[in-house]
Picture 1 (cartoon, helix red, strand yellow):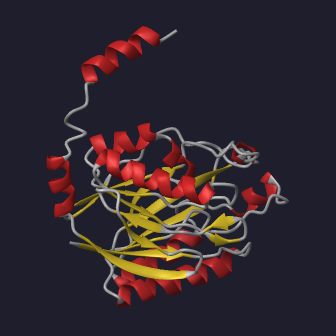
Picture 2: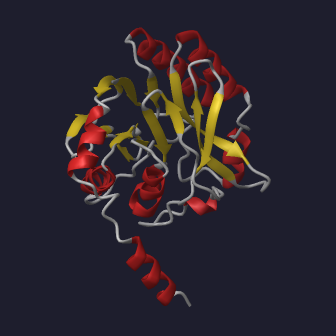
Length: 273
């Protein structure tokens, strides 16, 4: 079993205000006995469309900056793992990384993942402010849980979830700021359920609420059943995950084992330019 907390928040444009909210929620999750608290994308700050790339870069920090250092101390004090997101400084002056940072219960940085797929779709261009990452993150292991991390738009690319599952992930965590629009709630819920079903794993998907975002932070089990949906309210909820369900599902519905990699590889090579 693993008890996890999902935080659904409305980030403001003020970094210090969001940091105080995060610390308070870490303390709350710790009191509730959670082993992990997962925050949504853009925890550090909401970036409105009017904000320039240069202005976002001024907010950004390195992974060892004050924002994460404060969260590290909160994780250590409350003996809880924390998945937080920041605008991380890059070598390009007017671009930042959209980075998820995993802190273990001792306050150590266990993993940092820079978002691979930038949201250049539906009239948005994240590439105007962000620099894409270049690698799939390593898994984070805690007892029987092996966590793989994605960020928001990554959910629309099944290849990434599959790679993490093949590396051994039995829980995928996808912090998001899913933008409002026609059918966007349907897209969000469908993508999360699909990634869970096709990989036989849990998906934890904390989302932003308010501003331009849909909320609906979710946890979905390996059979595609929604066990948490926070709708449009701000707050924190804890859920106990039954990790035996992952192994049972993968035995009864062995999608990973039944893949025809011999055929896939042959056709992939045949279609290369």
